[in-house]
Figure 1 (cartoon, rainbow, N blue to C red):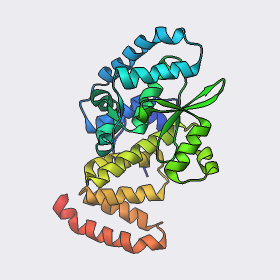
Figure 2: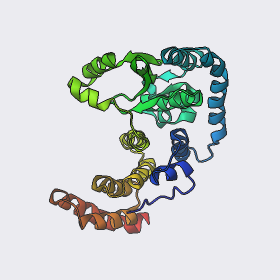
Figure 3: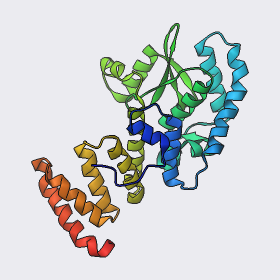
Length: 278
């Protein structure tokens, strides 16, 4: 099933769907444009270019990745006061790079993308790490892997320190945590970003925004039954009754038995609502 929303103007999201090289920064801004239709990307991109110009000379005189990462963290979190905030978890703005830069507040994944973009422009590779409960970035150094926690002011952790911290945070076994500390591909990162947004929108009962985000998730994984089921249920809550009815009918052809009664009841309600909302 194809997406119900047209994302054709989102060049980098389309590249992601086609499994072509893409920019996570640009995809984040394309997603932010769903919430801010008049968003001009230039202001955000200029901010990244300014950070590159500020740091380029400093980086050239440094002999280790750790020193570069410490300088990067000091610039972003202290000089420009962009860091983690509990408040950022309660609003979609905490996920959007343009708003993270404007407010100085973000959540782990958006702040990690910000660090990755600045580092990449300076020739330093930071990889996203989709670790449980807390997104991180990681750099390969001559002395081993270093993990950067962008949410906590860019603090640096060795692999051993990271495993111990995440075990305490998640109550997972060390071997389980270790398996999660691998570089995440672009699709995994975007899916995590979108899941965060959809969960937030649903908790706020902002079903119109959740509908757009869920369509992006379905576009990435069109064969996923759980994603298509959630799309149909969100369509119903967003008062797209005719669309919800069509999606629910399609789902009933292949749904597991345990879902059939519930989906049938939702379909009946959607069909009753069609004259009201359509």
